[in-house]
Amino acid sequence: MKNFMKILALALVAVMAVACFAACNEKTDGKVYKIASDNAFAPFEYLDPETNTYVGVDMDIMAAIAEDQGFKYEMANVGFDAALGQVQAGQADGVIAGMTIKPEREEIFDFSNGYFEDGQIMVVAANSDIDSLEDLAGKVVATKAGTMGLEFAEANKEKYGYTTTMFEGSVEMYQAVAQGSCVACFEDRAVIGTAIKNGEVDLKTVGEVINPAPYGFAVNKGQNPELIEMFNKGLENIKANGKYDEILAKYGM
Ligand code: GLN
Image (cartoon, rainbow, N blue to C red; front, side, top):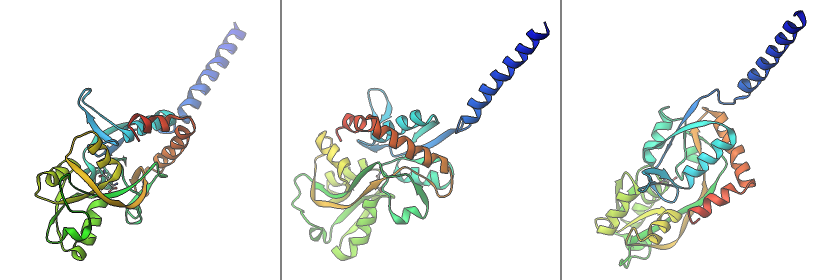
């Protein structure tokens, strides 16, 4: 009987040790991270009408990395500018939204390693004869809140003599150009390329890609450093195991 109790006690200790080891090893303490994203930026994030869920390269990369690294998250597709605002306000832990890594943003955010590279390109109506920045003189250019395209348009408006009108999302910005209230906009090349390829917009691109740079996952500066670490490790793993290539191929990238 004494022996039996001894064995029982030892077994109990062993079970508890294993349980503790698992719990202590759980990197995220059961935390559910809040991640914010754009809502109309195919192929990176867009609403799939068939499933009524947000899909895309960013959505799949986030899911694959969270699975690889064993953390939980909730995704909120609130729009680009809103997503950046939520992270800055501490309402979201991270943002993945086809977000370009650039020095000014690195003062506010901490970025992961780059996971894709793209720049902006000028977009005009399919039947437009505008084919350079010089042709924009006296005209109105559509911009999207918080973006690289907005920054480029604003930085060049005096030089080329045009004015700007800002929209919240890519869809509204495209509509303004297609309907003629604006003559051009600047959009990420892969994104406008996808919209044109899918026949969603009667637009065309003009000229070369501007400022190509990597996209990164971001957190508020100095916060959730473990999330950046896990994103980078997970990204490395899904690149090594073929999942990353699979995701890009799935969305025609
Ligand atoms: N890559 C661009 C930027 O970072 C656009 C991102 C977006 O509109 N989702 O500003």
